[in-house]
Image (cartoon, rainbow, N blue to C red; front, side):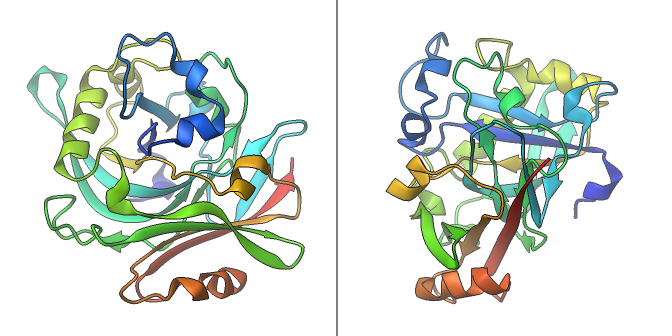
Length: 276
């Protein structure tokens, strides 16, 4: 499916694909200079690319650990990640084929005015969280996708309890979803320019040797009051659950998080925070 150990993969995220998240995260000003305004996602950003000597070359993904840089305020971002094939056509057009999905934490350092989004996303090993439980997508994100009815929930584990960090949300509640989302991703990977906090993605893909696989996180949900006001501390645990409500009772999710137990109908990520 996707061999993360090989290093020949790209990691991308989407900024602003869930209404209200950027406002809660205090990042609206970062996009004030963009020519495109209005609702919907602002653009894509890289969090991993195999470019020699570049900070993004460091593999930031872990399924169990989270590193907290000294003095930094780190906030979790519960998301769905897609494992995708990337195909390059004549004229450098990028085509994207989703193969599977998993729970993802696009953890971010809260730093207003950062020159590029990527500098807040990859600060070394264990920056990002990705569940080891991938669930196959037989028909990608075409209409009627197996992902359509799933939901995203997240929880902070602290002082022996697990409390909701993000608002339990339907995957289909993303502003862009399905075939429209894939078409938008393809356009950004093909033509996104260097503007404001965004980077020239075609150039970066070229420097990375045109990787054939990518992990693409499709956007963070809104926070609960706890999530909006709470940064991680050493010893905290953070869980992201992407689950099928037809098979998983949401009231059981905190208990599953406490046991780090993935069951049928669930892609679960649980990782423990520690200092560098």
